[in-house]
Length: 634
Picture 1 (tube, helix red, strand yellow):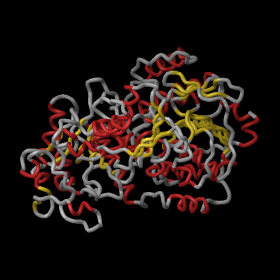
Picture 2 (cartoon, one colour):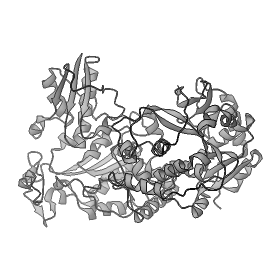
Picture 3 (cartoon, helix red, strand yellow):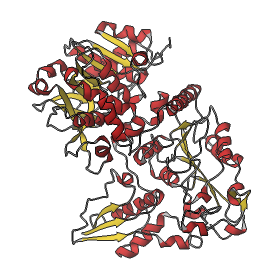
Picture 4 (cartoon, helix red, strand yellow):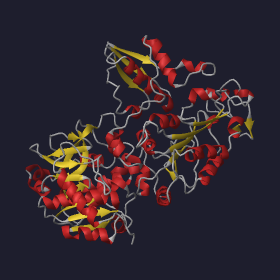
């Protein structure tokens, strides 16, 4: 077996193309190669099954600096950029690598797929959206289109398509109005997750175009592909860049400068930054602003191409309710952007340590024991109902608080349904008026509810978690009595290279990530760590780029403040779409349906090995008889 490390310092879009060659090498020669990667965009390779960690100092390992000289023939040969690395590696390895799919190869974990998008967090529901890139990197500004034309496109589709603007904060991305503005708020992995949820993409020739093709589409069918409209002009030959299902708007053959293919020029005017691209200037510039090939593309051209997806029946416009939610999300992010600026890799550690120094010496008043569940709206109220009914079935007498976000998620009738089970419904938005939080959406509700409930000793349960016993018994375990905090393991372990260790100022530890579907804490002993965890979640627009949601904010907070916790040694037992957790004796005590959630409409997926499934469905049928799923806002 040959061991190969592939090195490449190219841009993100190029690295996406390299993923295709690694895939096809392994498909053509299964078991013949072990491949590791050294690129500037390591998050692109996360969860890739074709990667094997290799040591560069191993004498059996060969290292290859990757390039794709085939690009120099792109105007002359009928090939796509995906063939570039494959042709290069075929020659270097002496192994023919045929292209097997017309896309790169990006992998998402089940956890990432089940994690709601940033848009969902802002709008409060699973809202369809298009990603828009209205600028680009400074190295090749010839690829930029006109901001006013992008704005004209956005304005044309207001109320029908919600655009979400993204872009690296170090690059040129002019502000657009009417969008959900996530510029500077998406790391590479977060951008990949956003693409997974996206209905479509509007961009110039850039990495996002390649991601639009490479990332699987949520709820996809074999026939369904993600919509993508690319404002390309005449810089690249269309056949070299375009994907079959994309609307690639080019001018090849329309101008003398791109008559034979792409011109491959870099800039409209010199930037005097010492880059050799200053010598590779466009020959036909309109009003010292746009290359003529980009100026020829009007806003109406782009509008027409987007409309084709809807006219042809591939996509549907927003419903009235979705449009309202999207508008609400745009307002939220706009308000957030007016507040204190986003944390950066350089400022996060100092700002968090300043917060720690400002914590009071004494904890707030609290007493008693209780259970906290977060679950408003039709989807989460339904699964919370099963969780609560199972708690009472096992004889749990602890009071329960069900936290939600506003009257749109919980009405009087829903509260009345829970009254017989000693459940208090708590509107987090009302609590927020007393204890402000910078951000309070999605996962951030969990640490907020854990911190601000009245109990001293708390069991926090995800609404889709099914307990298999009375969890109050966990308070009596020696492990809890010793440290006052119980957490449970997730599947993975944060690698030493993960930036979260550095930005939190926590020395690396080889230990499991946290799975926060269940948490047991004595707040009187752990309150500072809970406050710090909440602070991390208030800055989710930064920290969620580095970790998956709220769960490892607890991990980092407890380690940062050196507050001990206990964790059962038994790893997760996986059923289909279910994470089973255990007590310290190895007994299954929680069944977390993180993927296959209960639904009010049904039918509910039967899971092999899921205990007491019939009883859960009985409770669901009980709810269906009592409630029609209609929420009347107060």
